[in-house]
Image (cartoon, rainbow, N blue to C red; front, top):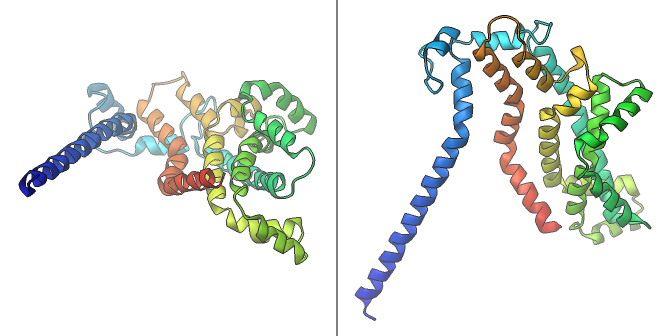
Length: 297
């Protein structure tokens, strides 16, 4: 085959490759726009006045940017019979999510470490039972959890919701850390044991600093699940102890007065903003952590 013919084949392959990449980018762009349209509509609606919302179309951009709806959603919107906005309920979610994430992550790390590096009789059975807990639907545990919280005197409180999320999240956190710790070299731990290091010294001094990818994955997963939870929040809290998801539902479904769609949209964005920020900031670390766990597991 001549050099000219070979060059033509190479150029044809290059052109086909560029066309395939172009088609791929176009398809991905269409899907990206499709998924971003609801967020764009929410932001645009939250920045409009009620008069502009009634007069314009759903997809139109605001003619005059107004932040009144955001201030009202945060400070003075009526959530049921309480007209103090989402602010106290956002802090309820913060006070609930941060301790629950820390507790479930730490206990999951301890469980995963014990089940992989300090094996004991029945470890596989215990792990199978813990793993089974990851597949139990939320609805199944409502009644047992309600009775338990009542016996502990935590019913209808934020600490009670922290306990619920910490217990329910243990199955997932244990699974994440167990899969990661399987790939950690036993030789390092054996050397530490020979030097006299015990269970907790090895865990905090050697194993935990090595498990940053698993910690990132677990924290992002637990934060998202706990912050966005509605069922446990509406079942186990009342009134002023409601998390922001329950408060948002009550705000949107409030039937008194004029329906303020701009305030509803602003409130929805406020409620979703923490998880959006977490994924934007730490999304790449989440994927890397999953990949590290998959390779090690």
